[in-house]
Length: 390
Image (cartoon, rainbow, N blue to C red; front, side):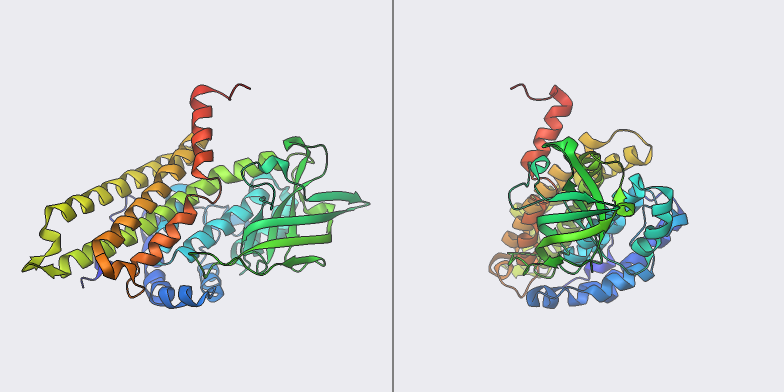
């Protein structure tokens, strides 16, 4: 079968530094991540040592300021790094995206003192983060969350349960949204909670159809005491922080989706050019050629869409609508492309001997996390036609 790594994506990158960065990521992906991906996903093993390596290489804080341990890279570059990682193994690409999301609140809304004290270890000190917004009874309706933080002198005491938390139970720190005031979005505040805080515990990870190596679990806060110095932003500002975080996080999901789709396309093309039926490669048959052409076109369209949104963000311009569009299109593309890859491989595509079936199982979750694709359509329509009338 042809060597897929021999034909990397031809990327448009803004600097020589960015090109060197992508080369480094590809090398790590091919040497340290891809060879173990199938076996470790099947075993449900989380590759913590890979995240340690990525941290040492400066790859866990790319879009943040270097004065706090970041990489000073624009989102345009950071997202293409995510795509490369996700193509090698979605658990790693998505894990880096979630870690970046967990760092966002402090990097964007924290005080200078908080950033100096906490960010260097978060961005380049080997730590791994998690983002806690969803709850068992509040997913898409995040403003109805019930986890509560009550003021007690100079501390806050947090009680409640968060759900569907990537890295839940293994993270070194959690960015937590908790209710400190009235019902609704105005009563929510953000906190930075250490992973070893007394009263914090992770439940048994969920048994998922895909991404079995990435732990997703409920996180329980049983009277967790957090000093006020770990409150991020103002009291009642938490929901605005959460929404701002998700605008950027959705771009991470979009990039991961395109990475996964690209891996599926590469697998399908390699198989179709190697597999022979009726005396010739099946890639010679027009039906498959058209499928491959459509898959590639949708991937390129998705890549262009997430990069357009990233460049808007880098320029300091509004990008929430474009981020929602990118998340919607790229994750739908990943689902379609991975399904078509299974079809191209035929019976072999349905077996674990080839990665296509894993790609298809993994793609589904991308249409759900960080705002379902139905929510993305609501966000896009709201930007175009205004809020819904009631």
